[in-house]
Each structure stands twice: as C-alpha cells, then as structure tokens.
Length: 353
Image 1 (cartoon, rainbow, N blue to C red):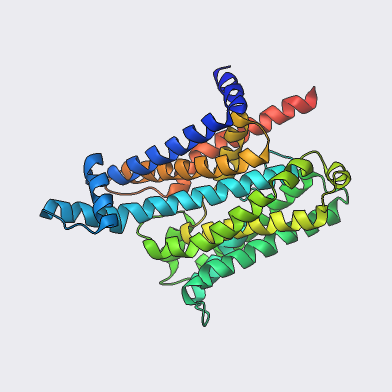
Image 2 (image 1 turned 60 degrees about the vertical axis):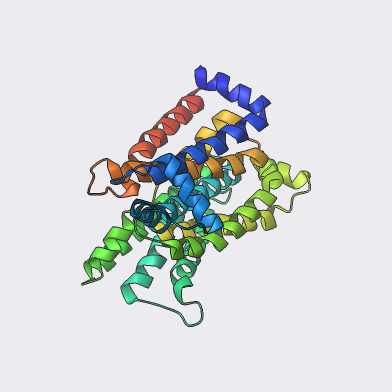
C-alpha cells in the first residue's frame, strides 16, 4: 500500500519525482566514490573535485593519494557504471512500451546475448578494425545486437503472424540460450584469452578507466536522444499498433527507430561492461509503479534511477567480499530474478481472472 500511495503522490508531482531521482543518483555517486578499501571523506572528495576543476595545487601527500584514487580509479568506475545502468534501464523501458509487456528487456529478448557474441568474437580473435581502433568492440557488439533483435522478430513472425508479445519473448529466450551455447563453445576453444573472456562475461566495470567512458558515451547520447524523441509514439504504441496508426504514428518507421536505439544502447553497454542482466527489467518496472506509464517521464526517470542503481550494485559487488570482488552481474541477477518471477506470477493471476 505504501509504494502505491507514494506512486500516486509522484504521479501528481513530476517535479518531486525528478528531484528524488536526481538526489538518488547524486547520493549513489558520492557513496560509490567515497566507500571502498580506502575511504575518502566526503569533504575531501568535494575538495579534490574542486581542485581538479579549478587546477589548484595539492597541499599534502594524503591529498595526492586521495586524488589519484578518486580521479583515476573511483570516479571513472562510478561514471561508467552509471552510464551502463542508464543505458540498460532506458532501453528496457522502451522495449517494454513497444512490446506492451513488463517482462521485455534487453536480456530476455536476447539482445544482450547477441551483443555478447559480438564482443566475444572481438576478444577471441583480437580484432581491431582500421580507423576505428578502440571502437571495434562496441561497434561489433552493436552490430550483433541489431542482428539478434531482427532475427528474433523475423522468427517470431514465422511462428505467429499476429506477433504476440509472448511469442516474441519466448523467441528471445530461445535465441539467448542458443547464443549462450555458442559463447560457451568459443570459451572451450580459447587458450590464453579464456580468463579475459570469462571475466568480461560475468559483468564488471572494474579497472576500465576513462577510455571506456569515452567508448560508451557517444552511443549513449545518440540512443537516449532517439528514444526520448519517440516518447509520444511509445505512448501511442503501448495501446496497440492499430490505435497508434489511427493516431497518425508511422508504426513501421517508429518501431524500427526504437529497436535500433535500444540495440545501440544495449550493444555499447555490453561492450564496456559485459553481460549485466535484469537492470532493464527491474528499473522500468519500479519506475512505472512510482510515476505511471507516460514515457515522456518514464524514460528519463528510468535512465536516472538505473544509473544510480548500478552504481550501488557495483559498490556492493566490490565491498561484500573485500578485498576480492564479485561480478556485478551476480548482484543484479540476485535482485532481478525474484522480481522477474514476481512479475510473471502477477501476470498469470491477472490472466486467470
């Protein structure tokens, strides 16, 4: 009852929802940077950021140590986790709106697995395409995520011409399982690359640095802007394609744009962090309960909350068994799998009525 009352309050006061979401993201970032094997006092954290921005000299060795920890290790890690979480959450919200099903997300639709195949092939063969160099990994991940989502839709259409959402999700799970087996085959064939590929597949933002932030950022900006520009169309599509057509939406064009943007975001996120499941399922579901189904607000708020959520999940992954680290995908799966089961049970009860 409490979350429903809170949801009604936030639905009636969008400004408050944005303030709370941004406060959650800011607190997550501060905690994520401050807490660790070496604690950085919050006052010192703000002093360091101020000094870096205004290029003021450092006074003590302790300041130099804290600055190196914050600027070279913690801050890029927190920013990367935030961008990955935001990418997965906003693409999950878009897929759920497009397919009119809260169970749809990049993970269940097989998009994450497709992106993983592209990344594993890049790592396995040590590919680096001329001119693009460092961007080879995200571009191949994005390409394979495109191929996967369109293959899923094509196969689902062959199975069921009406393209029921359940058929699409089931097809996505089948493709995900098949691609997972393909990845396992490649791992079995690896030698020295084994450790790198397995470590990457489990999902992590550890020791990535600013270069990885630079890799995901352009994909994130393009994908997020495309989705938010299609918020009105997503609202229309959530009532069904026929209704959207009557409302003047070019259904085929908009569906294609939304699928491309979602795959772009997912492919880039998987390329820099590995497979991190359930963020695109849990965060949009939670956000929708709080602020309602209007994609004009659901998309940006899912993005903000998703960023904060993954920063905290990453923090838990690195302190829970310190000094060792758990893969971040383990933390999100422990939270996401029960939520997935809960949503599924709820839908079954509604259908029986």
